[in-house]
Image (tube, rainbow, N blue to C red; front, side, top):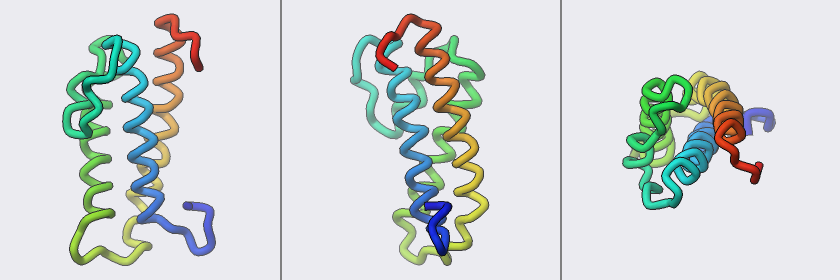
Length: 113
């Protein structure tokens, strides 16, 4: 979406949030031995304490959700280009969180990657 012509920053911002959400959901699913923590508002609280920079990623996930909600649900959304900086920031975070999540899961013995 960011590479589309013209870029679709508003939609990309939403997709990057979901990438972050599912990366952390996989970590929590594995660490908790199940998936009772899938609620978007609840998931960050179950970030394992031994996950790298756990509190930072809890806050990043909450912030990404707030940004996604604004992009998806604001009654008077901004122009698509107004979401550029947020989308690019979440793109960087989503990429980093996916790598950290994979590395964390591998280190814990998860063989399904």
